[in-house]
Image (cartoon, rainbow, N blue to C red; front, side, top):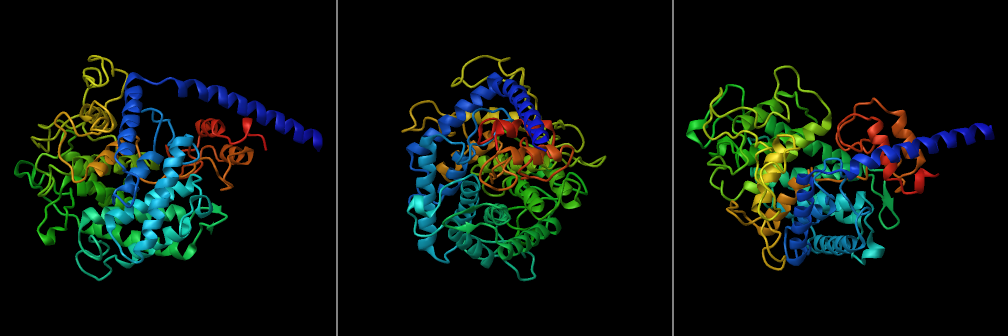
Length: 504
């Protein structure tokens, strides 16, 4: 028996070594565009640090700023994982701890006081921090534990959802029940992150187990309710008369439902896609398809034109994130669109003059002819290796808006060179970073299958045993987030082993 175990250990070590060798090569090779994206991300994070973005006492946008730091990637390579807490440098970890401390203490001092934008972003930031190994009360010196803060934020969000049977059932307003979709998207995104937190096998000595079946059940009920609103509450039309009703099957959502006088807008229709996904829908659901069709028919990367209700000039960056996030979640699901349905990679493939014609619809940029921003240098052709699509459209446009100069001023922010307006500079900058980082709003510690807090041989063996399995978004075994467990996931997780060569 001992001999058999030794043989198995030898075979496993050989496989791990091979996986490391195979994975190390591609990971080191990045394109010029991916390199420029990595530089832009660091510049944007430097700007955040210089402008007190992580301090919850100074800004309600601290949660989304912390999420952007946790989501940091080395480059624009889609294989780069988010750093989370455990993968961050000592300096970034110190910033994360300081930010988490300010968010936890601020949350505690507010009691039951709810504010959708603030609390939603705090939920997904604290969930990402906790699920990737962020220290708890003893280390932070906070007034309450991580779980107590998550519980407070979750409970007051659940308490303020509109539950009455009316045209905005399932939605939120700024500080209570209501029909505002811009606040609803943050409340729903926060609860979706809380879902991962309460379903986790992780724990800390201060909080104990994160798992909480009662709150998880309430969160699932709330997400199903708001998803049902978007599925049945979509409307036809647009504020741009030339692109008003383009098909009988498309539907969208405005800042408020049509019953309140709002036609669909780009940013709120995009958030309506991922909110339906949060409730359990997939790419082939009729509600999701109707929203995807509306957005595809009016796809834009430059600005919102006139399709942002009364505020198209202020909502560009969060339209970019909401629409990218929606399509990225569809890509990560691994579910193939049924024949005739629209998929997440179809945005930008329909010319403006093609049926149904929309004069302001934009097509994908051509990476081979796209000119790099002066901040990054080079000429047309530098980005020829990239694949046309939504990510290149958005990322290239964002790089063109990044400011030169020192971070103590505007250097590193995405507010220059004709950048559209924004509601809040810190939030605007964070939205831009989250797009560049391909973020979906909650980070889990990929590869830690058993929730032990370390990535070891037990985790790698569990992933190997499941090769060929289709999985949903946020499955910890799916290192590359493509919805299918393959040898690539084994290789990437082997690279992330806590112990050298995944020794037990």
